[in-house]
Amino acid sequence: MRAYVESYGCALNRGEASEIEDFLRARGWDVTTTPDGADLAVLVACVVIESTERRMLRRAKALSSAPRLVVTGCLATARRDAAMTVAPSAVLIPPGDLGRLSAIVEVAGPPRHADPHEEAGFAIVPAATGCLGSCAYCITRLARGSIRSRPPRDIAARIDELTAIGPLEIQLTSQDTAAYGLDIGTDLVRLIDRILEIEHDFRLRIGMMNPKSVLPILDGLAERFKDPRLFRFLHLPVQSASDRLLRRMARGHDYESFELVVSRMRSIVPGLTLSTDIIVGYPGEAESDHDTNLSMIRTIRPDIVNITRFSPRPGTKAARQDPKVHGRVVKRRSRELTRARFEIAQENNERLIGRTIDALATEKGRGSSTVLRSDAYKQVVVGGQVPLRTYRSVLITGATPTHLLGELA
Image 1 (cartoon, helix red, strand yellow):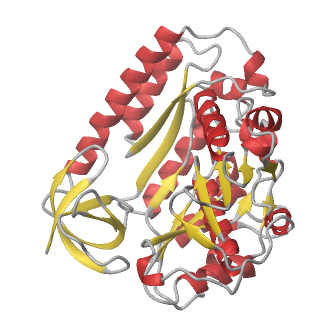
Image 2 (spheres, rainbow, N blue to C red):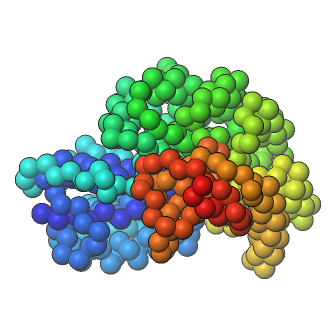
Image 3 (cartoon, rainbow, N blue to C red):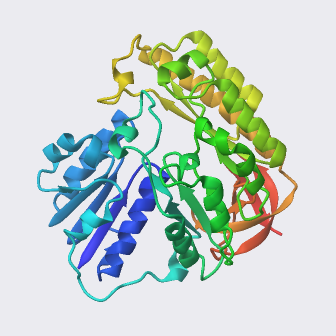
């Protein structure tokens, strides 16, 4: 029996898709790379913005030609009616619900395991689903509900299994990783300590964390980043540098809190790579708010800024908020923020030219190139095929706003 799994959206979706593939293999299914001839198709779908939802509905309709189709991810809960309209024969299950999947997938034969030597140099390990936030614009919160953390022993066991055959990048992910454990009497710092007890060689990337969730664990978290097994990488979405808009968004933090976390982390973790997010054109966003965002980019100088144009999602408070920002204005502001973001990122990366660094090979690049990750989680592209899950010494020879160029030293 052949199964095909297709995923979109956040790292949590991709991590859950990987677990679905492992789940199917353990029940004897062959997991294929194409839906052609598959007996089962699984779509792990995202609906974070309207254009993404439309694409997911098109994919659900296309994949419904398979003998059986399972739709999961946020589409299956937040936009269930829309999914059933385009794929009425599909089975919809909540994101991450392997128990529900087990009820509809029979054993197809002896377990089939992927060749570990053909795997990528990274793996995504979900720590929790859901969150404790109440952001006015977020349909993901409606889809996944309140936070449900996985037991630390289960997470550690999964990482131990994945890293047993050699060095690996582990992406620990959640909707808000800093909120991990608050529903089960623990926290992210203690989870990291448990993971660091694992004796295998790995590099740990901590996933997105909201400022309000980081603040209670900030000092302990910053101290853990001194361990060389943690990538010096912080994904801390601000969404807006305007306190007025942050209140409208119901983010639960102000800009000063964001600055505090960044300052503290940078003081403890030299060379930290900072990633943040900005929503452009949120209802009520004035030109002065846009100018504040531009100023933030030039002052904080993040390495990565994920810029998203506001998209009203059904069932959210933001969908009913006014005044709306005209599309032409949103496009212009998005272009200006993108230009500033790339200018800063280029300058940040150019400072690394001429240095020799150690990096872990994690992915095959375009053509015959290989992608490696530095200790600061900088993406380094080198020519030639470097064996994945190996460390190499790399001379940085060039820079772009999104990655570094290097030569094997």
